[in-house]
Image (tube, rainbow, N blue to C red):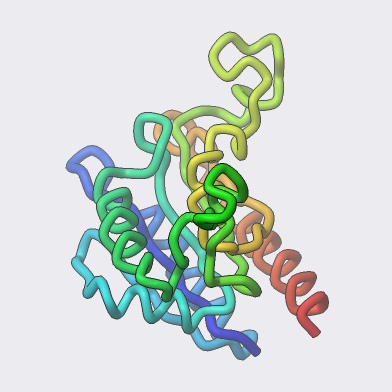
Length: 202
């Protein structure tokens, strides 16, 4: 079995206290521990030790990033976490520079990561309905997918040489929540993703 780091990146607000993201993070922890994995959970809004978080990324075989989409990106507190933890880890623990060398200063940008063999999974909650994505007739995303929206997060992970696992998304969680159905889909997602990932790793 493997080591799994779960990052709960929700930022609590009065109108959205983060209970769904907390529940999904706890559901992932319970599910994965029952499968025999060792799990650490960091709730970003409660505070963290920067160097301990760098060490947890090194320790982990898989990092799950659980967060709501706020204004088309990660909440400010999770962005602050990434700014602090990932910048500190640029001492070689998470990446050795940006991948370029004095001999080839224009080549291989973003390829200096130190976490080869580590996987990551994004799990997000959105106010947008599922129908807003992957449909060119929809005027806002214009056919874009959830992963298109999350491209900066994927690039952050790639910068550290982490390999992607399929993304999970819970849609329309403010205006038309389907929480029990989301939990059922999340369980099935975890089951499929980690069964396949563990099979490949074996």
